[in-house]
Image (cartoon, rainbow, N blue to C red):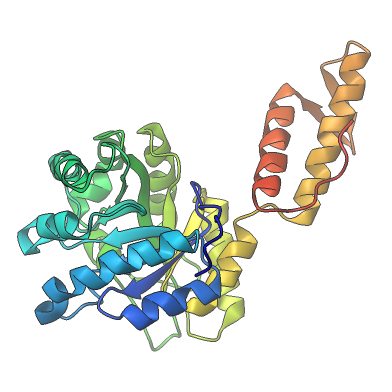
Length: 316
């Protein structure tokens, strides 16, 4: 990477690309797909006999991603399978967050927070720097999402999965589906309650950036991926975790304001400014009534568009 200063991605992250932690070349190649962050995986994507030896590669990967301005998340193993050692050995400047899988209760998050504080201190990193992404893949954890989200100020996100059905003959599941007991369908009605609950309870607990993983879409089927991404956004998630690189561009597209949304937001702000100059705090804009609540939403839309380098209309 060049020696020039780069801008670091921050919350909310639109796209996170999973990459096996034991494959340094894959970690470096991940940057070419322009994800906001990379999830360096020490859990399911790494063979058991390579997990310990993958930690140095993950640590080097974090440094590389930092130099590229890309967030570095690490999915560690559960504590009974070496998760604490994962944290201590990969701690280095540039680590954005630890993803804790198979979560069941608050105690596990509190334990992780204590381990992080120790590891940060040992590495000379200010305490509280590294965030937590909670991944409740147990029935108990799925029932107690608000408690998980509020267990530590470090918890910025609760992550779930939206699972597609490849075909009538092929059913692709995952830990969340097994824990909750549902069978994925194309329509996804069986997942609506759980994913809506996750978004609401994540925010209620203070984790304002719930995210979902795209699972089960056939590689190369961009239409199916777009439908899942649209469903993820409509449900209330703020970003996508992507298992395949081809999903990243779609996630980046969906999790930023569209041009139409930006134009509409600018129109709302200009219309309300004109109205307020006349002493009015509600006005008819394009056939709908808008007021101060709409102004605040429009301001957030414009700010998010600018954060992603989008051109915005002139505001009066």
